[in-house]
Image 1: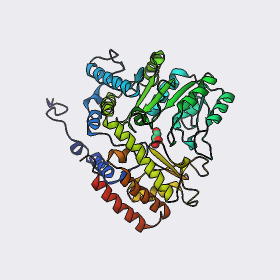
Image 2: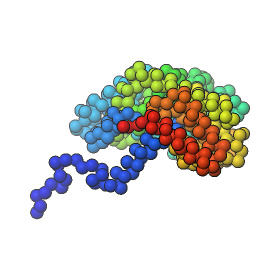
Image 3: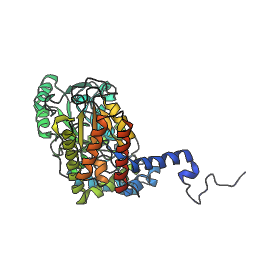
Length: 424
Ligand code: DSN
């Protein structure tokens, strides 16, 4: 019988030596991120430190339970990492209790629903076409299949949330939870007004700040922490802490939330991702993060202003956040979001087609585009670069079928990416 070890312990092999096909794809993805402008509002570029933590040996460790109370041995370093992530999150957002184990923003929402709802209970949330999220009750999602769902909307005239309509719907629907916090809403959310509506009907209030975690942490967006009963978020968007989710609440709900996440909704936590969260949260506690978050919003405002100067309709007339939503119908009634998304991608600008309030097309080929500034701001883009980017978008929207326009835009993108290198 061979005495050879099953695996050569002398060294860890590289992805390239083990799996050239995956190595090629990874290299290509790095090249794609370097050479294009990431403008999907929910994306960002994490630091190399966060990448290292997420690629660490903690991926090998099972750590069901919580620090000091695990179901398996060997969790002392997992405990250290999770405790650091929790303490830093508490400092960033000022929460009494934090659970850093949700695998994603949707899993964080699932944790809260599991803690407070029974199947058949009622959720009141924003319509997906108006900026809501799948995990807030869409029929294709477990939420829409498990709970009874009613939706509120934005005011079709202003594009701002219709808080009065929300309150009236709450009074007639009598929900168990009202969900605020959105995926494609460009304006500051008035969490106190949602909370007042929730209190009026004796419902919980879940504020899902997945998109604006970084803006809230930096104080450039109102915070729902201490206002809403539960605050959920993802950790890879404006906060730049790598893939994952998070739940915050007051101490009174701590045990219910922890039990709902594990064992209620998840098994073993992804400890390598928790390590990424700890590192990203530390980075966000540095004063420079406030400058970053302020610049994210300034950049989005410059983008919105310039797109409007170029004749495009920006939903709500501008933005208070990291994203801009363009309704193509008034200026380009025959052009769809998907056509623009494809033409821009060819030019090296990567954003997404998006539904808009009062959508008249389908979610697969909607009437709008959504553009975000978190990743470009991480690359060092400021006002001047954002004006150029806005012009490129407007040029391509005006002539999505014109190869010369796309080629000219691609040349400008090359210059911008060369001037703002990524992961050198
Ligand atoms: N898919 C994300 C977004 O783009 O908003 C939310 O989960």
